[in-house]
Length: 112
Image (cartoon, rainbow, N blue to C red; front, side):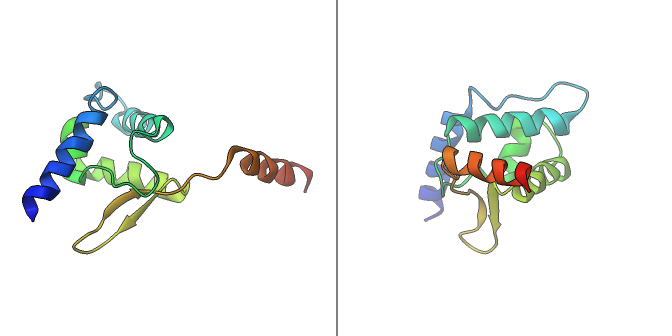
């Protein structure tokens, strides 16, 4: 069972390889956030899909797991990902609202 899980993880990792690169010295948080946002924008992980494991993401970006957790918390607060605990847990991409609906919501906020 763990082999199929690791195979799925490596397949997802291969799709993300062009986007997720080690961050440069400086503000690792901001660069990691931008790279993961790019993964989400490009749809490299589909709605409901699981991001690679925390350890793998941190290693790939060459940032600490603490920094990665801060990045994932921001994404969770923005409603872009959700964290699930347990055996089949992880960080999952949330469904994105339709663009027209997002614009309507923004207009309502501006008018209110």
